[in-house]
Length: 602
Image (cartoon, rainbow, N blue to C red):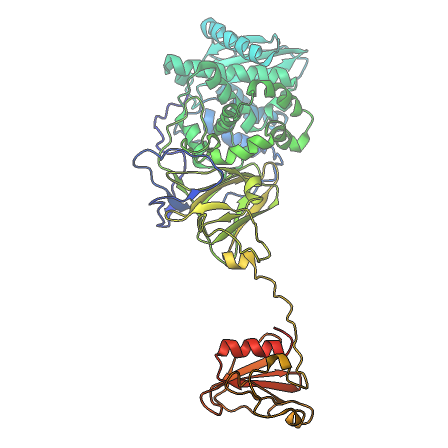
C-alpha cells in the first residue's frame, strides 16, 4: 500500500502551544480511580489550540458528478470536462473508490468522458443490464497468478463473514501507471456478479507484503459488492465504510499494514467527522476491535443497511456498531496514554508508536467563574485539557454526551466515564478539608477528592455519538458549595416591670417604692455584690462611648465603661420601645448573662 514512508512520532496533532506545561507532581485522588505508571521519559503535555471541525449531522451527501470526475482525474489521469488539474503527486492505495464515483454517475457522463474513463481504468462498461460482461479490454493482460492470489483472499473474507458468494473473477495487469496500485471493477449482469481486478505499475513494483495488502483490500471490495447485491449501493457506499473497512480488513487478514499516512490522518485529526473519512477510518474500526467488538460479525448487517437507509445510511451504520460502552471509550483512545486505564489508548495492526501527548487547552475551572464548556461533536471527538483550580468541581451534560474525564497526570491517573463524572462532586482541597460543616445544608456530601500539591490538569475526551451535546465544567468555593448553616430563630426577650428578685444580690441601694417611678419602667440598682440592674425608658440618644454588643433576646444592645460609681460596666438593651440597663462591678460576659436572664432569653 502507500509506503510513505514516514513513521509518525505522535498520535496527536501539535498546533499552537499556549505555553502551559503539564509539569510537576500531579494530584492524587481519594476513594476511586485507576492507577498507572508515568509516561516514558521525554513525554510532555503541552496544551495547544486546534481549529474546530465543522459540525456534522451524519446525513450522507453523495459525491457530485464534478467531484467524482475530479477525483478520478486525480487518480487515473485527464478526463474531458473534469474540474481542476490532475494531481500527479503521491500514490493512492486503491483506485476502486475513484472508479466507483464516476460509475455512480455513468448515465450523466458524456460519451467523451465515458471513453476517457474506460481507457484510463482499462475497463469496458456494458451499455445496459442485458449486455454481456466484458473483461480485459485495451491493453490489460491476463494475470492468472494474481487471480489465484486474490481468489484465496476472497475465500478468507467470506469465511470471516460467513458468506458463500460465487462471483466471476478476472485479474489482469496493465502497463499504465496511474497513482492507484490496483482497482476492483465490480458489477452484476444478468444476475451474475463479476469482479474484474486490475493491477498497475505501482502494485507490480511493490514488495510482497504490500502486494498482499492490495490483494486483501481489493478482495474485500468484491465481497462487499456481492453482499450489497446492488451496484449503485456499492458505487455510492460511504467512504468510511467502503475504504476504511477495506483497509481494516486487509490489515486484519495479512497481519501487517504499511500505510502510515492513514493512521496519521486518523490519529492527528480526532475532530474530523467519521462519515467524511475514507481510508483513514481504519482507526475507528481498529478501535472497535481493540474494545472487543467482533468487527467481522458486524459487516454483513452493516452493508445490508446501506440499501435501506437512504441519506441516513451512515447514521444507521454508526448506530449499529457504536454501543454506549464503545462511545465512552472511543474519545479517550486518541489520548494514547497506555499508563492510564485501557480506554485511554488504542491499538491496531500498523499503528505507529505513541509519542508526546499534546492537547488543546480548554481553560481554567475557577471558583465562581463561568463554566468551561467542552463540545461533544457528532461522529467525531473533542479532547482537551482543563485546569481544575476551583475548590469544588462539577460536570453537567447537555444533549448526547459520551466519553471520559481523567483528573490527574502523574504518578496517579484516574478514569471516569463521563456519566459517572457528571454524577460525582470533585474537591481539590484534599481529604482533610473536603468536608462540609455538620450544620451546613450539604453536610455529609461525598466528594471525589483530588489531593493538592501538584498539577491540577484534567483530560476531557467527548463525542456526541450520532448526535451532539456538550459538558459544562463549573467551579465553586467549598464555602459556597456547602452553604451557610441555617440561623436559629432568635428568642425575643421581654423587659419586665420589676427587677426579678432572683437577680437581687446584697442590699438594694434603692428600695422597691422607687420601682415603677419611671412611667411603668423599672430601675434597679444593686450594691457591690452585684450592683447591676436598671430598667427604664429608651434613651433618645446614646453617648458616643457606647459600642454595640450582642445580647441574646434583645433587638439591640450596647456596652460602656463610662458609668458611676466607678469602676463599673453598663450594658444597655432595647426591645421594642422599652429599654433595660445593667451596671455594676461585673465583667462584660457576666453582665450580658444576667441581662439575658432578666429579659427571659437566658
